[in-house]
Length: 221
Image (cartoon, rainbow, N blue to C red; front, side, top):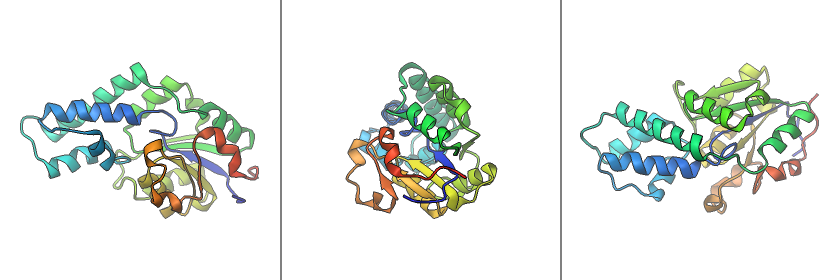
């Protein structure tokens, strides 16, 4: 992937931290409280969406009574935060990849659909906050992934053109958002999504961050 990459933008869930199983557990626990018979397959339908979009998505499909959407949203955030603090683990190769990009002179940023409160929890848990020049959440933006807004905003804050950015994503919504922003994308899908043909739009598909040196980037100028 010969390019003029000057910045690398990480997604968080499923890229920095193995949080997707914890999100699923939190969603099942939370939505079962309002009477939904929630499954792991249902969790996959909203992967990459913002928290309130997940709640709205399922309310529109199967409305419930008792708890407001805002209350369900708060309960879901509280549950997943608790699970991450207790059981959250870094994805394989996180620190190695951050050190690698830093040694090459790239600017580093984080752009996640998760709430900023959860982002801070994760960065503290993994002790990697100091690597990132810019940290962005899509929670209060007009559009979330697969819209490219969060990536365009992050590039602006890094003072780098979108075409000079490389994004690392695990979800198809994230890959689509990055490609729509005219950025290069490395996809690292989880095992269940690895054969999803839609990931063909990524510039490179890896099994883990430990393979990041296979991306063949030139040092930042």
